[in-house]
Length: 490
Image (cartoon, rainbow, N blue to C red; front, side, top):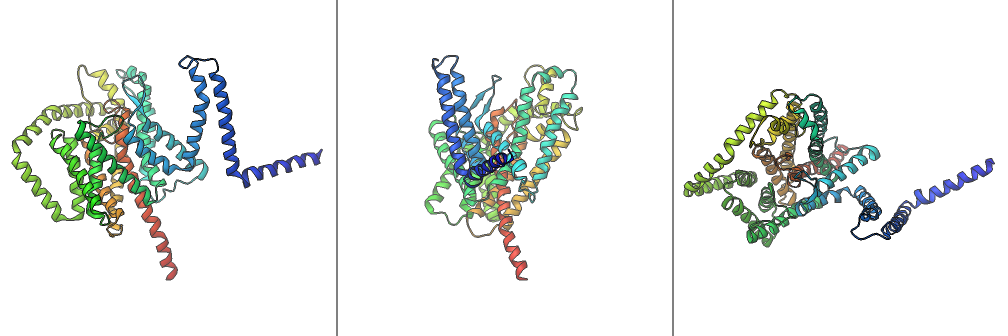
C-alpha cells in the first residue's frame, strides 16, 4: 500500500514537473485551447433551437464572453504596458460606453482602466509583492488620497443631515461610480509610472496624440466638429499644442517636413481655440499658457516676443475681445461665484471629510429649487466631497508631480533629442493642469456636470502625470549604474 502511494506521488511529481516546471508555456497554451474548444461547444449547445434575437440569446454568448474575457485578462497580466497604451488609444478613439439608464454612461475607457487597475494591483500586491514605487514621491499622497476617498464614502453615509438623507441613500450607484473615478484616476498615474520605462512607450504616447490631433483638426475644420466616438473634448487642444511646441523647440533631430506638420497642427488648433472659440475661456487660456510656458523654458526672449505680439493683437481687436469677455462673465462668471458660495455653505458642516463622493449635489437638490449650478472647479469639488483632509492630500499630490517634472527637465541630457522636448512639455502640461482645475472639473469629472463619461478626457491629465513619473523612474534607473560604477572606481 505504501509503495503504491509513493508510486502515485512519484507519478504526480513527475507529471507536475513535466507540465508546469519544464513545459509551463506549452501546458498553458494547450490548456487555453482546450478551454476555448470546450466553451465553444457549450455555446453551440446553448444556441441550439433558439432564435437569433430570442430570449435565449444570452446563455449562448456567456461561454464565448468567458473565454474572451479570460484571454484578455491573461494578455493584460503579461503585457501591462500594452494594456496602458490601449487606454490611450481607447480614450481618443472610442469615447462611447454602456448606458446606465440615468442619463450618463459607463465609458469603455473607464471599464478598461478598472480592469487594468485590478490586474496591476493583484500582480503587484499578491504575486510580486513589490510596487516598484519606493523612490516615487507621489506614491504616498496617492495612497493616502485613495484611503481618504474610501473613508469619506463611509463617513458621509453615517454623518448626513436629515434633509439630504433620503436622496443620498437613493443615489448609492452614482456615489460608488464617483468613488471609482476618484480612485482609478490617481491609480492610473501610478500604473503608468511603474509599467512604462522604455522611451519607445513615451514616443508612442506623444506621437499618438499628435497624429490624433492632426486627424481631429482636419475633421474640425472640414465638418465643424469631431464626430463620435472620436474624442477631442476637454483639454485635448492643450495637450496637442504643448507636445507639438516641445518637440519643435527642443528636438533638433526632427526633419523639416515633420516640423512643418507640427507647425500646421499647432497653428490649426490655435485658430480653433482663439478665433473660433475666444468666448470660451477654458478653451483658449490653457492652450496659450501651455505654449508660453514651454517657450519660456526654451528662450526668455521668445517668451517676451510672444507676449508683445499677443498684446498687439489684443489692442488691434480690443472691441471684439472686450465684448467676448463681457459675454463670458455674464454667462458663467456670476453664476459660478454663486455656486461656489452655496458649496461653501454646505461645507461649513462637513469641513473635515466632506459630503462624500458626489455628496454635495444631494444637498443642493434637497435645499435649492429651480435652476442651480455646481461649482465647475476641481478644487472646490474635492473640498466639498472629501473635506479639508482630502483637499490637502490632493494638492500635495499635484505639487509633488510638478516638482518632479521640474527635476526631470533640469537633469535630462540637453542633447536636443526627443526626451528633452518631452520633459519641457511635461513641465508646461503639469503646470497648466493646476490652472485648468480652477476653470472646471477637467481633472476629476463631477458626476452631475461632466458625467462618468468625462473620464475619457480627464484621464489625460493623469496619464501625463504618470508619464512624468515614468520619465523620472527611467532617469533614476539610468543614473544608478553610473553611480555604482563611480563608487567602484573610487
